[in-house]
Length: 455
Ligand SMILES: [Zn+2]
Ligand SMILES: [Zn+2]
Image (tube, rainbow, N blue to C red; front, side):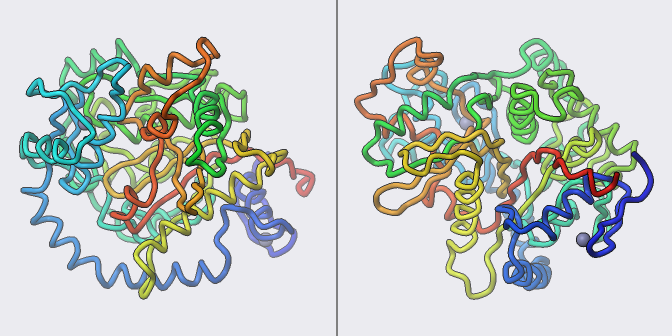
């Protein structure tokens, strides 16, 4: 079908049929969509956008100055990430969790010292980190209303999205240390072409058993078990945006969901993703992205949710998006708690979910999560007896340890003496998120079967 599609209820128009279908779902269906902010929240978001705009210039100036001194290269051999000081401790602690006593040893320190989980060691590792300037992925606090790249948020997918502020070339803060490069080094290109990505499939059923056994878990939800954990290759640095896109596509391809054919049932490489994004710009989808990023092909420039949207929209794959940002007078954890609520509701409303079980398996797609400086893939959420909640994530910076992968496909029964410890690499809760006050969630949306409105 082509031409203009009209909403039969309110006259909303769009040239993309899926956009109108989604509009119907969002504005005219009885059930409340778990991803749609209610009116109160929308109004609050508008206030936040104004507040953020007023505060932005001052905040930016501070960050620009800090940028020269506050970034460090991760001291773990084979990692290669450049991190803001504020992220370094968490990052090193997770390298430790990646590196269980009884498993393989992927996270070896440059100095040869063995990582341990004590906090004093963690700060000594920080001291070993070589100071060097580096990137921040997003602006301080993703402003509600527009992303750093100027795409309206809390919006649903479709090529009709237009930027709402002047477009400019982005710099180091948004695109990373290599924001200006024309081509990545040859060794890295060869590495990525030869090895593609590191991946495990079947981790979610292992985590389900750990959660079931763990006395510090009250209940947990999990996404579709076919979602792959894709993580970085040794020394690749940071391609986290690409790795999260690949995880989302692993769900589409492995479940044969709409869009799988467009990907030829294969997870695209970093280079193919770059091609798809550039082709999307060629088609006029978020074409301002080309002004913001310049040429993307063959570079290490960071990409984020706007580029993920371009890619999906160019293949007619539907997505939606929600942002969470603290408002004036909110307690510091307000946006974080609203995000947990939305994620829990998203999984709790999955068809056929058994609310009586401790571990509640669903077939929902995973969610792409962006916060300042990093992105990861949400595969579930856990509530602990204390009432504390943790997101369950596949973080592209960390690979699955052997004490997890050896249980894949029930090769060995999952009987951990400390299931709580084995879950650590996959949990992100208040201790991690309290540093951030703005979050973006983006998810793949199945095409709605409501085309009878247009027949
Ligand atoms: Zn309407
Ligand atoms: Zn690292």
